[in-house]
Image (tube, rainbow, N blue to C red; front, side, top):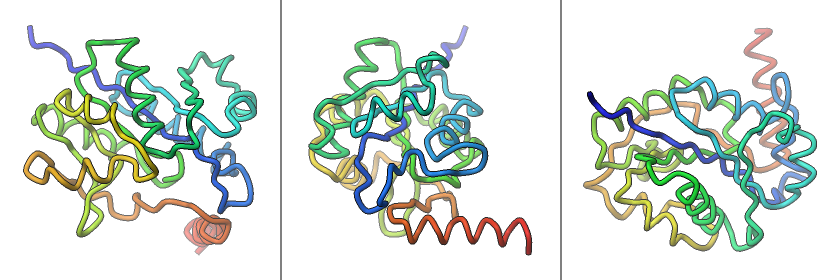
Length: 208
């Protein structure tokens, strides 16, 4: 009987979002906020487990999103100030300590509100057909997250540092990477202006 691949998702939400003038993870979006809607998207995908990596404002975010009541896995990186790379590494080590049978780790961000479960499933489907390769998202000249990493990359992920996330890892091993097109889903929101544009654009789409 063919082994069912175990895919774990890390939602990166540890940053302080200083350019947003507020807690970005909790910015209103759809029926709740950025982070909870990202959680819903992942839960609707074919991934096997979901883990949220928090750092700045971790206690407040956990309380506001009621993660304790929902029994969702929350990993708090005490060294989140060291950047996204450090938080990825911390999360990867924590998840692998909990489950050594994971075949792939899918990393996505809490500030890509247009991300769909269908796209995550595309990444997972491609990974199942190419289990030794990283399946990443095409950003033109580079690739980025969401990205699904194979076991071969777990050690490298666990050694990341700084604020560049997995960019260096994703863009130095071109032959081992398959990139997919996510169209407008790759938009990320870093500032209040970008957030306001997103809300206005959404209103226009709903009421043309």
